[in-house]
Image 1 (cartoon, rainbow, N blue to C red):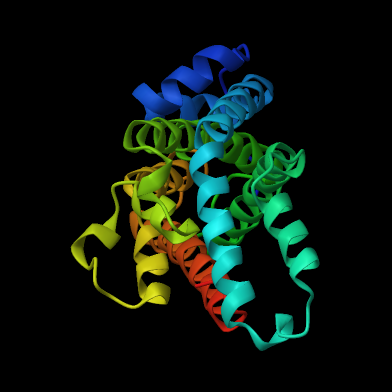
Image 2 (tube, one colour):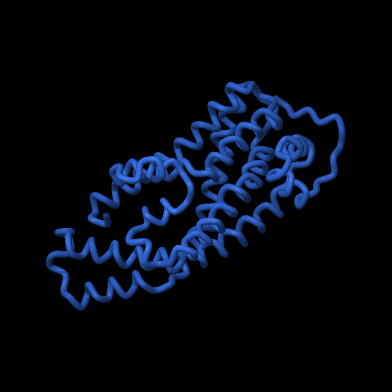
Length: 250
């Protein structure tokens, strides 16, 4: 369906970023007639990179511990020489360019997936949004969910110190999430619960608001597809954790 926008609104990307956090209904209403995402992209990337830098020592410490565990327990490395194992450990403990490129690539992938799911929800709910508006809204949602989330996790890991983390799941657990309710659960379940954090729940409500306000879908459809995004994200993290466990990382 077409998007009805009887009143012209001047695009103001900075105001839209701020309102997505402070007044989401206004932000998503503005996205109907003046979709914008440039400032949101800039803010998210800056926050992601700062957060990645702050998380770096904890992630590298956890990575070394995981690799040590894998080298000692996985049959794949049973015939690998000690010198080669040491090279692998040395690489795990060094900063890498991918640590900073990866989050930016994941940002675009995550926003694209979010947009496509929201677009399906818009179609299912006979909404009035389109790809451009939902992409813009999704990129603005990434500012608090991915950008601020990375920054806060970086601050938490810095305050706790590197010795507090012996694997990447413990880094994820540092973020306030449902994982705090089951600290002794299996590692895959912990990973899933860690994916339902303060910031992903924030994204859940923002996605629902975007479908309701920008797409003009029903509340039921909006929350149903927002829940799909939330559970898909948590489930994907748990799936990767299961693969890592099978490979001997945990």
